Length: 317
Image 1 (cartoon, rainbow, N blue to C red):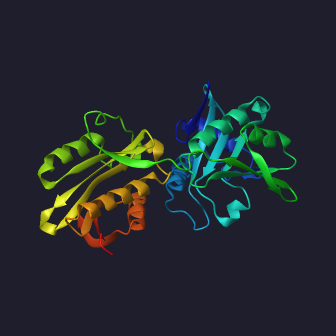
Image 2 (image 1 turned 45 degrees about the vertical axis):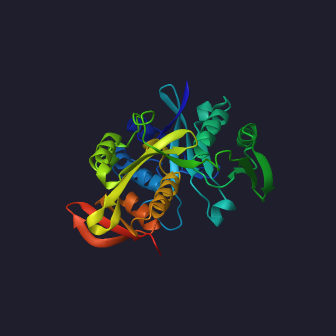
Image 3 (image 1 turned 120 degrees about the vertical axis):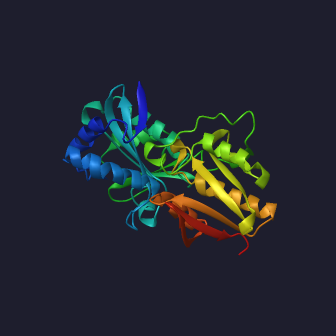
């Protein structure tokens, strides 16, 4: 059975796979060729996590999700999704690159792996088309793209440029107040995030505890799929809102949903109209959260509550 899984599922097999991947094949580079087991776990895996979150990366890089194609208990390929395009990527490698182990080529793994990858990419990529590039001397890979509705839109001396329509570009993000039908949704968090983010049970408990302070708890949806939760309430002493809880399920992170949902919640506070500013806290070390809040216009207050860093945003600017 074919399955597409994120990195950090089986470190031993992932390490053996990337260690043996060529350094460069058909334009797909592999900086981990020949890497040691220790360096793979201690350096490469944390770097992959940061790349997916867009944290601590060089300016020229874009966030990237790495996926492995499994056939039962064997890794047969690797697929990479670049979350958005720079000008260099638009005119170059595009959104998606992939590699199939030599002994598994010509058996349909590339076609099915790309189909599964496109299904993931539709929730990540914001452009209305997926950009791909293929070497002219690699007709097998071109056929893989064409079987997934790829069409050639241009070429240069050594490459064809291929486009595939992105059906997920316009997924609708919306909020639904917590109710008897949605409060039991089993959201997932990555193990390393559990220190930073409260789970849904804690969020609901706080919503109840602060019910006399106009607490509002929401489930966040992408179309009909629940992807996260949020909570805010009044802090009357500060004449402000407390954006107290916010998380996106680990399966849907890195796709821009958090920013969209947070903007909607801030707009809701403006509509409530009781206060002109909002506070929030994030746990020291949660760089991904800090980056997102800064993009939303939150600023550091210079204050902290133990390991919680306090930020503030003016709602009327």
